Length: 354
Image 1 (cartoon, rainbow, N blue to C red):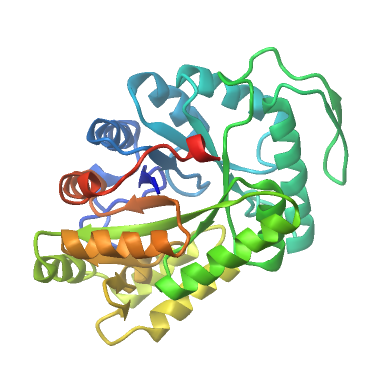
Image 2 (cartoon, rainbow, N blue to C red):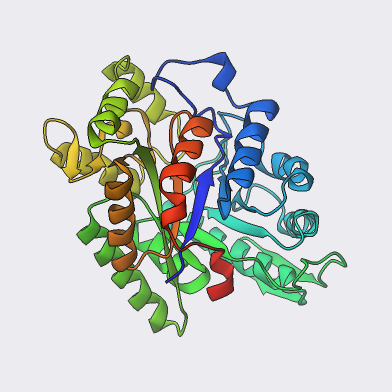
């Protein structure tokens, strides 16, 4: 089975040589983030996640529109927070970017609080459902009639449409019951964070069963860090070096900056870290030390090329068909992964199978 292999565009000040040690050259900026995306494009990755964060980094949609004409084959997975932008305008923006990409746009749906606002879980996910339904309708070039709690619209679609005339695939992650319900009902790809192979497999089966109850198919994606070197010893040494200058206070401060720092998924990543062995490994080649300075995806696949490939294949056998990897520094690790692992994988764009 072909899998989609994506890289990560560090738009949210998330690039380090040493976790927790700020380096001005690695801060999110147009030149640095441009170089990450163009490198991933040149190296042959299928897609790249462009994350969104208010307090950190640069704006995702603006960046996507600027980078789109400069890449040749890679898709862009553009993160958009539901409710942050008015949905008719967002639909026009995304359709325009898809045109600039010749049909290679994908969408990462975010359901966390809007900056400056805090909603309880139930209304926040209700807003997400309404925004996703409205966005899909408009991007499908269909008339929108919605009478919800957050949206009251009777609107013809904009003239500008995607290249295909249909909505690009929507990627969505979340671990609360409300989030899982949204994913099963509305998403095309459910994104989970790193965990043991057995746990990821259980999540994949659960989510595909939930989607089937709504008469839908749902692909499963895994967002994980990766550290690959020629030997296992070198990879483990690189992992240890990455956190060698990190203290507990700095790590906690970094984790606390995220808008989803108290979510169910983040709590699960913390539990995985707590369950790991003294050297930080939750199971062979799954290292949780990276979560000491991250609120989100808090583990990495660590090993030599054979070990990393085998771990990816184990997740694939467990039901994962899309992978979003990152590593530090993002340009250097992308090059290592592309040289040592990517040629071993049968990979391509996921949208062809959705």
